[in-house]
Length: 249
Image (cartoon, rainbow, N blue to C red; front, side):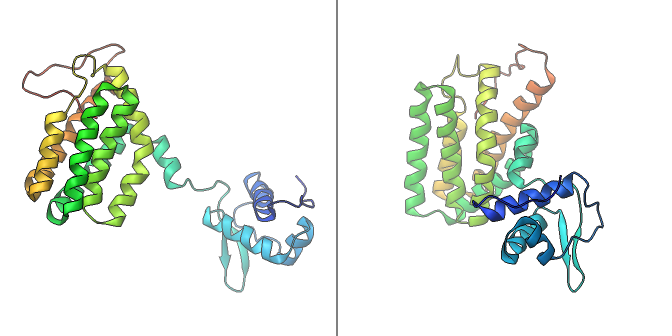
């Protein structure tokens, strides 16, 4: 594909796309030095500032690397996947293993740091989860995630909050599918209520060990159902344990 003048609409995006295509199609192999900014600007009919922004975007995608005093060189022909894309491609069981690491620590910190406002928010989230038990699976999962988000928020660590937020879209989709696959709410519309109540209570009274334990057990239980659903043949039911509470979201 030959380079050509661009249309007068977001120029940086267009320049980035044309240069990306040249790289991904192998016109500039790995290790090749790109033409200078002036040459590229003339070929695309844009200013050098547009080319600089386009090259910056390509560098952020891992395709090119600027070298001081030497120019810009092709580093790869395939862009690195961003974090949300990698999460969308990951197995839900893998997501849950990482979720356990994040949320158990968050629950412990929440018990140590919760404020009066957090205590009230947790009460509201637990009641919201119970109220959502009369709705469909999507509404119930949304309410379940909202409760867990309230626990994470009570930890007052913005990095933990952001990490949990990154997982939320994948969790939501996967949990709705899991509830439908296992038909867990046909007999109990509010699975896991006792375990969630224990988690909320432990955070509210400041018992960090109990909060971490309740969160670990709750997430681990769902992880076991995820692993079973991945290994079991279609329509197989998970093994029943009279001493264990039903799968929670």
